[in-house]
Image (cartoon, rainbow, N blue to C red; front, top):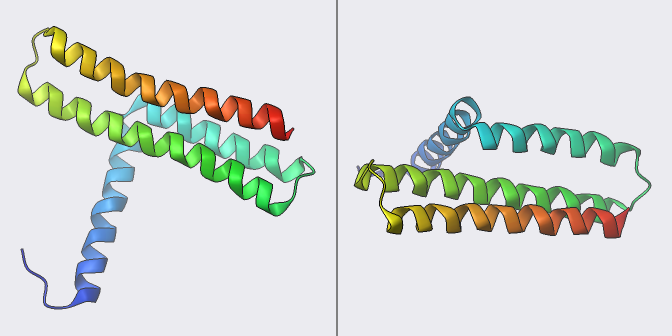
Length: 116
């Protein structure tokens, strides 16, 4: 579909992105958990004596985890379209995606320990 108006393109792209977030919040359990952690961390940061820059850094660091989770979920759905049956290649791909989210969570845990 071609858009003549850049604002129309921006509006539609934003709408698709928001739908993606909505879909993840409704259907993806890991993203739901990470969203609860995000809200909890924001509340905790309200009471922790850090600079605003440090707080923003910690918030954005957790948002990076959530971004990776969205990528993980999207690629896993694509893998499932390839073949629903067990295939070692697909399993290892899914495991590597999961590992990237795991490493980002570990990174965030260390960041929080260091800052607090």
